[in-house]
Length: 356
Ligand SMILES: *Cc1c(COP(=O)(O)O)cnc(C)c1O
Image (cartoon, rainbow, N blue to C red):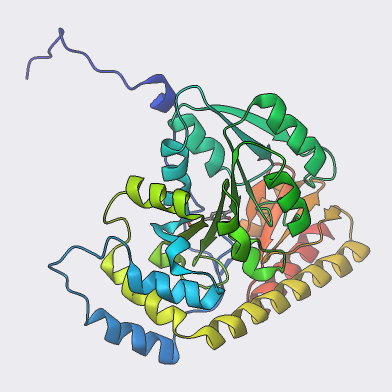
């Protein structure tokens, strides 16, 4: 075919250099790189999910408001369903909020290090991003953050609490102080709050400027379903339901999530076991750091992973991969998800062999 020289198309600047998101690919014996739950879906829960699949009306569009799913979520967390919006993972909600609640020229403040998707969406939606670095300790200095948010004239602030990747948390008093000291919309991403006790979820609807995000992907062990939730006051909830794509949560996920929330005891039991695993992994790492060189700092975790500063993080990461253990490399840190007893033992054993 003849090449047409008149019309020529080039990718825009902001996407020209982008690479598709690439979680570690390949087969590894131990996968501790994505902060997923180590519990498979099995037994009674799996049976009920299979039965629920048969109830899906595949020829119909999903319920746009995911009413039954949201009722299950709301009952489990003790909030009103009127203040909850469901999303195709909290990731979708972060995208929808960033694209719709901000206008041209508005400023979004992010803190770093933090979940990389916040800055990604800010860039894709071309909002101005001011990034405030958490100096030194990697803790959020709430007074400093408030000053920087005001100075920036921010319309929106987003951060994870507890934080991925640092594993550190901000007390609910500090979150309250931040929320009530700025004019901006504050999005508090509580993806890991099931593992800690400083949630503001039950107060979210009492603020005019807060959205709390939760997910089924971490403590609840359902990353495959892509289910996230936003909890906020009436006005924000109405806006969020209006701007989201109408059929954003598919019928299968709605049904499976509804089954999940009908098992609060199972959710809590598994969450507690994941916390116990993280406590044990963290203790194992501390004991190891007494015996070998190379571990510089183990951050006290309130999540299901441990964040570790290493002398030679990249080399250690690659040696672990060669031993069929996948963790997450982030600069001079490793982020290691809590796994089953055998998985934790294996990562500790391999680290010991590498660092000796
Ligand atoms: C994993 C994670 C999410 C993603 O949640 P999904 O519901 O799976 O999209 C959101 N925020 C943080 C901080 C996370 O670590």
